Amino acid sequence: MNAPDRKRRALLGAGALLPLAAAHATTFDLPATNLAPAALASDAAWWRQVAALYDVTDEVAMLDNGFWGSMARPVLDAYQRHTAAANRGNAYYGRREFPPAFEAARTAAARALGVGRDEIVLTRGATEALQALIGGYHRLRPGDTVLCADADYDSTIAAMHWLKARRGVDVVRIDLPEPATWQSLIDCYAQAMDRHPRLRLMLLTHVSHRNGTVLPVAEIVRMGRARGIDAIVDTAHGFGQLDMRIPDLDADFAGINLHKWIGAPVGVGAAYIRKGRVRDIDPYMGEADGDDIRTRVHTGTVNFAAYAALPLALQIHERIGVANKEARLRLLRNRWVEAARGIDGIDVLASPDPRLTSAIASFRVRGRTSVADNVALAKRLLAEHGVFTVMRDGLASGACVRVTPAIFTPLEHMDRLAAALKA
Image (cartoon, rainbow, N blue to C red; front, side, top):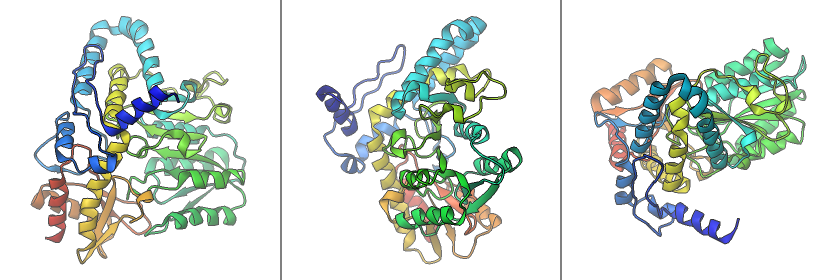
């Protein structure tokens, strides 16, 4: 990277933001700052101006932002404008104007992900990407073993189990340690590799949607690679909220969401296949074979406007700064987690190790591990305290309530949650 590029990245990372100037797009300004991300995270005035870019309900303290991420107003404006253009132009737009816009979106996504354009294909989300990767992975033979974990996403766990019928493999599930440490997570996978010498494929979830634990993905991937084990990485909740790029995972295959932490319209994601590995994934249902990654997914007619608005969403994400976003989200998460740890009868499902933390964390009332218990708890938080959360199930230890702030969440909402837990 040359000196001007380094300077530009440093300015963006510090939040020295310029007006957005995409064609016909709403512009916005954020004041320049020399604060490092950790210090900027506490700058309430700066984050109020970020929050002002979003139209968010004031009916509740919205702490279920892990479902999808709200679009910033300029992205929403662009999405509506592109929807109108597609509707007006119909097939003329779809066949002539949209294809170059779609490739521009793919180029912008590849740049943000830190990979080559020929290494990604745009999808409707991480689930579609991961199902295509898991179902298409053909380096398995009858009697081989594949591995998933309790913290993985339900649809991807189901896809791994489907491999038993599709490929004749044995499916093994492990339960990740709780509470987790960096080394205990690595050891958990190492022990599974030792127990299952025919293990050939692992599903690794970068950030668990159940409790927010960040997996030491790169370390586990390299450990598996040394034993001839491939990994498919689910980074639906990793990319966009953590200061990382896809090469940091050191994985050959990954599924990515762009509508969670990037703020693209709902229905935008990507599949990543490292250059040279495309032929290890089957072409999708009779698509032409070859090295073009686009033959590994076939979505059909897409939401034109969602993809056309993606470059603007990525631009706003870059202007705010991913390091700044990570620091702010960690501050919000720690605000309620640290308060909740001191409340008798509340079990917090969150590691104190910052390497393992994300915006997401979960809790339960001690001893109340059923789905019914935690559905009732989330309902009570809403009805009595105006705090909107969601129950998550699937962990070996039982169900829990998940809390997920966003970059527009005020600290007061985290304090409202803490007060509700005390009550």
